[in-house]
Image 1 (cartoon, rainbow, N blue to C red):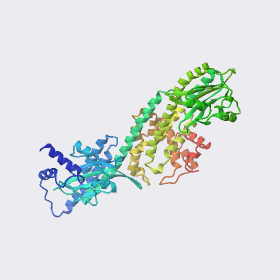
Image 2: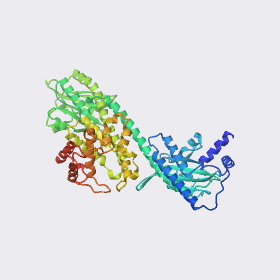
Image 3: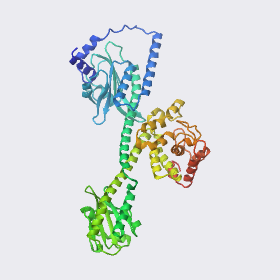
Length: 590
């Protein structure tokens, strides 16, 4: 058969009820090559009916089993095709397509299909509201089509091709309480002279599509998380190139003291430009009035420092009281007179970061061009260090902000745990400080605590949002979330210190916890600490199935399980922290 006829046939099927003509070569091909229709009895016996129901039940079980096995971590195209083939098997369809909605263009495109060429897949675009598929998305309503299409009901649709005997078209909608998000459409069809699709088929495909939509949604969330994780890893790899001395405040102090010592001055300050407010901020100040000047803000267009920023050039002012550029309000604020001042801009790549100032040489001599050259020589590497330190600081904030976004995305799936992750993180940090943990340990704790429940992204909404107590099977599924979370992040090297928090926060001191049943010191300290913080917040938070306990009641309950469920040393640290009032603002009730 000529290739052009085959392509025309495929295009006719692909466009289904959207673009094709009433009669096409594809129709002729399908009709001429169909087997003779089977002869069906006019009536169905009770035995046949029972057998049919049994087969249908088996189909349903197979469909839901297939849904459960779909792996959201797989390649997108592979996942799309698996969903489509599972749907076709469910209702014994001859063909079909999976179409997803592009939020930017509001058009449906084919992401998986059977018997269609790549050219057809790339060319078909269906606007929302156009044709049958577009109507299904616009109205979020499934359709069974066995006869002619009502063109008034489905605008811009064209008659169903003769080769297609029946079809179902169902929305892929994720529902969260009162909101619904339609991701696309699942279309399945049977050819003429075969048994038509029924309302029963429509109901089964609609149920399957609901599961498929959840799988697709979770896959998107997972891939978005992967993207953020790769971004985090990239950011931290840059951070690793910076030494611990690149903490911004440390760098500022080091630069300031170097300038004072180098030029033998009484005092000095570093002012940095706040680009958001267009102000100069005193970030580091040495001298007798340092405490009163720290953090003071000045407009960019005032003072000698403002002039240096505006012009990008150093200034020597050996009689500041007679210089109209001198901002005398600073002297009034400090009750101190600035006699001489040398100010040099901190410039990187032509951009002024701020100003370094030194005041009043200790020997009373005026500042000279040599002093200016010396300070400029110091300012060049200092500006680079400050830029690097600022970048380091920004990257750390970006890292934590991205982790918080991921944590919030997971937490948003369960409205009953809103704020839980943030509270647990702060409670755990207070306990860790009480135990004398280092700054590096505290940084790892913050990331680990924020991500400790990330494995819940793999838990079904029906379990996660269930207001009643879980069944044993549901509880077993929930118990897998620490392992799922650790598997999701194990390939991200920068997040490796967070894994003990994720993997072990449900282990118990007496060995009755999960997922591994570790006992005592076998449980990493990160898991033992987070278990106490997690439990304290859970007990002082309201859940659908119980009211929150008071902090005192929760502490009493934790103390009761000291040495069995919880590490005694960590329980004691929690008690000390609470008695000092450091948890008062972190509990949901007063």
